[in-house]
Length: 468
Image 1 (cartoon, rainbow, N blue to C red):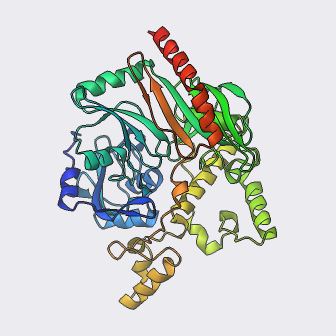
Image 2 (image 1 turned 120 degrees about the horizontal axis):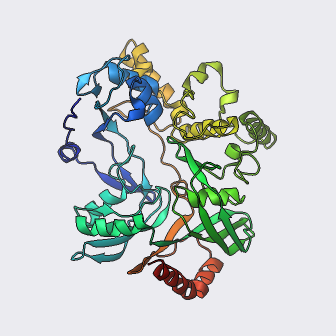
Image 3 (image 1 turned 90 degrees about the horizontal axis):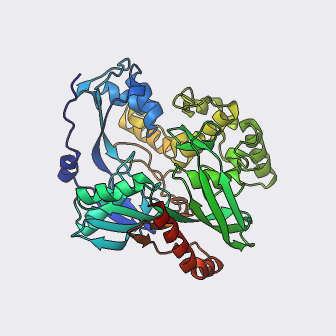
């Protein structure tokens, strides 16, 4: 089937431009209308639209997507679909929503280097913002913020950084420059240096040479696996803070794999201190995935947390195992776990993915999320009953949106929007760009950097030149 022309999303945003406000150290986008759209991917062929929306996008509940499909808001090839509609090659999926974009930190990207004539732009990206529009992020992305703040229309990213990671981003402002800079990264002739803050007292020096592989697309989970791609990293301790039992660590990846530093640090038993994927005892067990393996089952972890909080008379969060039967309908299906994994997953890793998904749903407020238009409001007989339903459903969430009726989730604490991982310097045979040190590095760590910086910089430059 020939692909149809997509809706011009820029026209949609121009007609109703989103408004930006700064609140409590966060950059917030007020809700706006947006057309989410994508062509069917090969792994979606033959699957029902409602199943793909629920398992692949995970932005809203199944009841919402059922309502959106039945009401004609979510369409295939601009035509109304049904709950039985299956996707084919070339299908265009569109869903117009009242978008509630997640906040990011209010700090703007710092320009490290700019040459408009050459078409080069280098910035230090704050953690929390993705580079490109993705998922629920449109205006709160690095590229959109640069366009808004510096009126730079054409931007071609040459390297990648995770949403949660801060540091050096090399960008072309001309297509030719973007291709030239990008080719250097593709060739592997760039040396990268990072700084991380990890749990525990890190050894003086460690070298990890362990293969890793991505096993779950939704959570972006990467694990150590014998059938993975080769990955090697050098680590050195910069400082240790006994009061917080955390270390600041210098990281030099010798390969460039997704989540390489995060997974290798976890493998050593020193995960990044605030990493939501790889550091949680409630996800990985008491050893936090040391040695590249979960410690034990979900049941044991839930029981430990439940008993620990009970003994401490601490508030007990609603855990799936201890939910009332009526609430278990809110737990998402996990039948797709392992569906996209290139290797067969052991049950222990399936359990990790289940726990990660439950954690994300809870942080997004999904465990209390009833898309009213597709669920509870259908049961309301009059406006009073509908209002009562809405208030009951959104209790403790800060109310509901009067336009689209979804519960409003409170803004997360600023420190939960990024991780302690910073791309501090990139070096090539022709150039070297360095980002300012992040404010979470302690004084001892800064002293280590100052004392070792020039020697290390010279060694890195020599190694890069020898690669030519």
